[in-house]
Each structure stands twice: as structure tokens, then as C-alpha cells.
Length: 370
Image 1: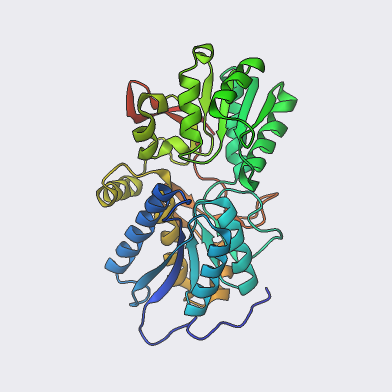
Image 2 (image 1 turned 180 degrees about the vertical axis):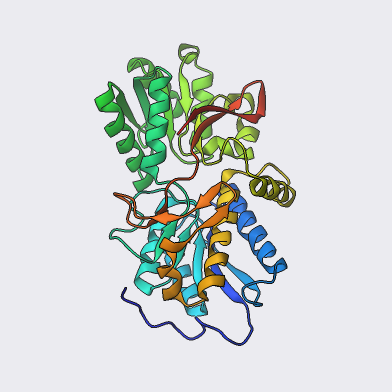
């Protein structure tokens, strides 16, 4: 592996902290609630590592930078964190932001364990420096497409905004559904109002509408318009990207936000470790933790294990990805090379299609298992 020289401070021996840079969306237009959950998981795991003696007696320290869903801001943060001497990078939720961070981390020779960004092509070329915990978009969204077919949906409309992530999602759905008799009808949300979406759904005889759009807007307005249109009382609304996972969704939409299936990366039953972490996260967040909070916790659990075994040298950390074997909150975490994926990938975390129960919106129903 071509190893750039480590800057001063990358390997410290003076008993100071071992630092991990954390990239998290904490302000708009970033998905702030997702960022808060991701950070809560990262911070909880750091606290537990330090309560257990740290990294060979040195405290583990999180150096947090807000990406605000801005790829340029994330790139600048990676540069800054590299100069500060962090041993590795962790986090990020938004795929387009994580892609920019991963490209910069690869160029600088800075290990990056991506927590939550699913875009298959996280880097343009295969890299040894980047690993990922969450499932790749193609894996999760094909499971979602299976769910659609099993539920009897073959004419599927997607309300889509322009972005690499949404375009990739629409392509995955189209490529998977077309050979199996499914049709994907794309609705360009640059040209349509939420009310006009309803007319398009009627005209195209769609039985399902998928939200490939930002949260809270225009997703919330689209849901409200469709729910209020009597012509569409039988249509299923879906959100594969997971918008209904967060409490803000239920707060903004109430009953309208239930029965909207989405992808969730949690097992049906948590292990004893997962249950303990869930309790601690609930206390920290003041609400039920999302799967994103577990992703944050697992990220630090992996990095702490690597740092204990291999020290804070960046090249040794990156070389250790294929040897990782860590009990996470959602299963045994190991990384491998997966066809079509340019980074070291955990294949695979549990994947379910779930929705909020209309009779009890705080309860999630498992509709389909991957």
C-alpha cells in the first residue's frame, strides 16, 4: 500500500489523547436529527472506551466537525482534522458528503470508517483507506424492491430530486424491477408541486409512490397532499431512504406518517449488548434511538478495537480492516471486498423493511426481511 508520510502528531507517545475525527451533519440543510443520533452513538461508545481504560491507558477523544450536508465543508474538515493529527475519521450520514470526505481521506492516507452513508461508489477507485458499516445502497434497495413486488406493486412512481444519491436509488429500483415485470415512473420534483404529483399518480395508474426527496421538505408536503386526495386512498407511500425512522417525521405528520415502509438496519431482536446500548442511548437522546445511533456506537467500537491492537499509526489502521472481528450492537462486524463496492464493506448488517404502526405510531412493524 502506498503510504503517505504521517504528519507530526499522528503517532503520539506523550500520554495525550488518541483522537478520532467525527464528521456529522448538525445544522441545516443537513438532516440534523440523524446527525444528533449519530453523534450520540459515537459519544456513548467513546465514554465507555474511556471508562474501561481508554487506548492502552490513553483517553480516546472525539474531534467533531459539522458538515451541514455540504461536501466542500466536509473536504475542508478532513484537511483540518488530518493536520490536527487524528488517527482516523468516523461518521457522516449523507452519501454525497461521505463521498467527498472519502475521496479526500484516500488522497491524504487517513483511515475513514463511514458509519451511515450507503452510496455504492463511495470512492471512484478501490481504496484501502476507507471502510463502511452500513449496507450499500444496491443491497438495501434491492431488498426494498423485493418487498414492493411481494406486496403486489408493479407500477411504481418515484418522486425524485436531482442528486447522485436519488438518481442512484432510482436506477437500482428500475434495473431490479424491470426484468421482474415492474415499471418505474419518474416524477421530476423540480417541475411538479405536491398537488401535481397526485394528478401524475392518477394518470399513470401507479399503485405505489416512493419518496426520493429531501426531509422535511418536500417529503412532508407530498405525503400530506397524497393522503388528502380521495382518488389515491389505495396508494402505498414508501420511503426507502428511511425518513420515517426519526421522531421528527411522526411529529410533523402525525397519523399521516404511519404505514410508510422504509429500510431499517436493525435486527428483529437486539443482542444483550444491543439492548444495553439501546437503554443508554435512549437516556442520552431522551427518545428511542434510531438505527443511525447504533451505527455511531459500532463505529467507535470497531476503531477502538483496531487502535488497541495496532496503535494510532494511520497506515497500520488501514491495513487492519480485513482482520477486524468485533461484536457490534447488531452482529459480528467483519469487513470484506464486495463486488461493485470500492471500500472495505461489512456484508451485511441486518436489513428490514418496516413501517410505523397506524394503531400505535411509536411502534415499528417488520414487513419484510432481507
